Image 1 (cartoon, rainbow, N blue to C red):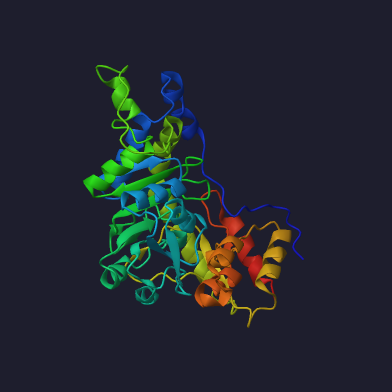
Image 2 (tube, rainbow, N blue to C red):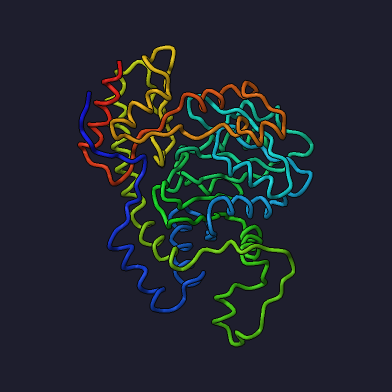
Length: 382
């Protein structure tokens, strides 16, 4: 039995002196809500992801909510959602008083299965939210061929810096939504971003994130008559990002490509070292895809493994190695199962992913010894 007492977290944000120093400017300027640092972050993010517009918000869930509203999703509409994703993807549809319609996922990529989409479309279907799960882009080209009439809102929560055929995530659909939660490759604590090449959609998102105001707080305060309040023509939301977060985001974004390159090398090493374990399937990345590697998610084949997936996770936890299921099958969560009378077996790909996926640590605070320790622990399971 291994006696090493180290603790390897499933994810640890890479924050330090640069981020600490970046906070000085907004703190000393007094501009700590959405302002110039958020604008700088948005500009850099748009440039990196090759889009005309990037609009920062409070988190990816609010990004999804605003993106759907900007697309015109309202009560009575349906939105297609992969059955295996974080719950917020489906929750955002409910925030619009619309109905999430689940679609099964590909058991290899864990992403929405394009061949399952057509059967889920009805006269009420307004949009689809393909999730770039764990940093691997969904097959947006196939989705466009199958459902050209639908608005596409990319859930790129895990996919900053990822790409499909040299086109960055966030530029593939009508809008893209990103997360800067600490488990993501770059973080602002909480925080999100909406990307689009559509001027009208960008203007609507900008208005809705700021209470529905006709101009932003920065525009008003820096204008000739800051004492004149803006007009409010619609009901909006306070979904803004702070300049404290924006300042950290600017520093983090400049490290994104280095972070992904390192994770790519580590993922390749993992795949090579773990291929001799017959019961463990490592991620598959097809040609033309650039993975963002938010997570390294494996699949435990219990027909070949000496333990069940959960027992393996407990075995690793006892040895200081944190693991997680990849995410959850939303249709199996109590609220959704009860509300829509869904059985686990209705979406077998998502059910299998829910029951047998296992994320192992992959982040930019790990060293060679950490990776070797994890591989040796997995090999020791027999």
